[in-house]
Image 1: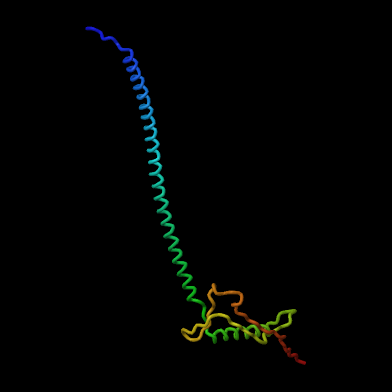
Image 2: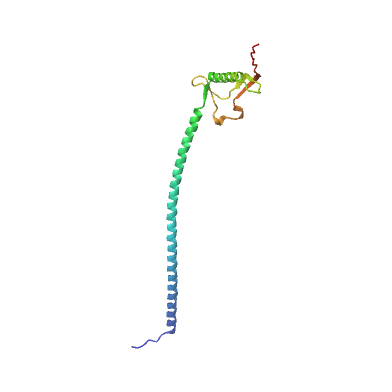
Amino acid sequence: MALTPIDEGELRRLRQVDADNATLRSRIDASERSNATLQGQVQERDNRIAQLTAETGRDKEALQRQVAELSNQNRELQGRIDRLATDLPRVTIKDLVEGFRTSVAQINKEVLTRPAQDQTPVVIEAMDVEFKGGIDVSSGLKLSQLPPEQLVAGSASTVRFTLRPASTIKMVED
């Protein structure tokens, strides 16, 4: 068998192709390592996203329960406020006047029957009541207390009374 002479140009070209193949193989290997690293990072991020999604779902459920509880509390408080607004204290004018009259009579009686030592006894001579509130005519004429949100400095009822020295007469036998 006869050997074919080797062309130097062809040999250089083959060597260059071989070098290019080695460079290409090196780049492919580096690319595969980089791809494996990137796939690992993507997997880590996918796992983190799944974890955060689960945590967000749990947080969302907890917040929904909390919102439901607060909504129930709000409804209960609103109901209590509504009841308080409609269930304001009401008193008839007769009962109000009778209450003051009875209180004044009782105070005056105690001053006269149980005098305090070292004090001049005084009795209530006159009383002036200025009632500020609402008037309820739904079942007879009744006065009602103003709701708390309507109370201001000028809306307070006042009670004024005049005191006078009580004259006590002692009976002495001779």
